[in-house]
Length: 315
Image (cartoon, rainbow, N blue to C red; front, side, top):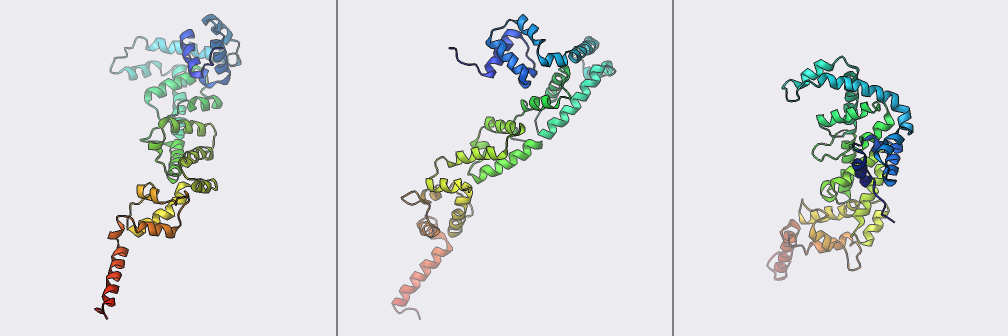
């Protein structure tokens, strides 16, 4: 039995067999299944085109799409004689087509799409906006909210430099939680991971589910004593930070973190259990920097004073 193809492989094969495949075949569940069946059953291009007309999507949208096709051909005929290299190309196209139904409808679709992209925080170029608006308008889906939701989900991509909209809010929440679990989001997770999370959230998955995945990764390599505390709802930071603060204060080190090699080496006893704060205080006195602290100087001074008193040199 031949191995089952992934949808990405089916999509690539469909483009070989049937030519241009519109985004709607990715976003519409019925057409996605239709495309999968066509490739798996090795249907010819003629069979593909003929059977497409029997789908519920085609039956519902054919008249509108045919009308759009007619108005689009009118639109393209008006701009055919304008050279794309003309410095005033955009201006001339607008002047030539501004009174056509296609141009007006496309502009409306473009404006609506831009607003939704901004709200969701999906990055796009002007060329992408033009292409996506045409795809929606040409397929008569510019007002189909369910379809647009699926369509836009395929366009989500994580921009680490300038996230915006809903993506920015979700990223900030996840980034804050990741820090609590000892991670730096963009260093410890791939852009593919983060983009996948954004797509899932856009489709209704919860932040709690994403955080659970981060928590699971944070447990890797932790001793059982820490994992038990994390299972009770504590983060890595909740567990370690009291110790970090205590040792940082004792050593007078403002830059002490839970990732400090000395800290990680001295946090646990021989059984792999967390030491008590008192035991950590004792361990801190063995740290090479402890000798430079005020506490160390005071102890040394008091020790020297006691010796002098023992010899009767101090009153």
